[in-house]
Image (cartoon, rainbow, N blue to C red; front, side, top):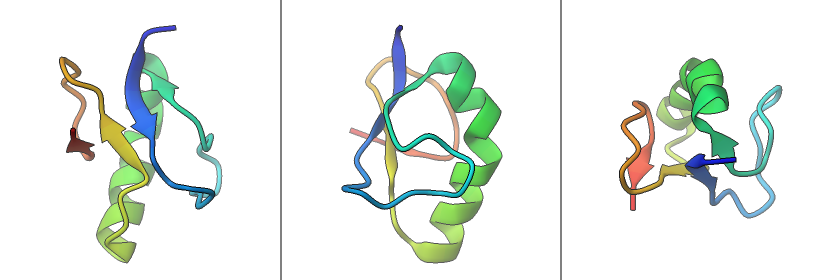
Length: 60
């Protein structure tokens, strides 16, 4: 599995979104939920892996 989003949530989670690294397909599937949760809470639970071009997450 190529990782597009790395989980950095330290046990926190978004209901309905796996609390683990996500593939590009999964990142696209959950992008809206991840972005909405980050906007609402200010917490970053997923970071984009370098070279990944998915929206709604921080890059590290």
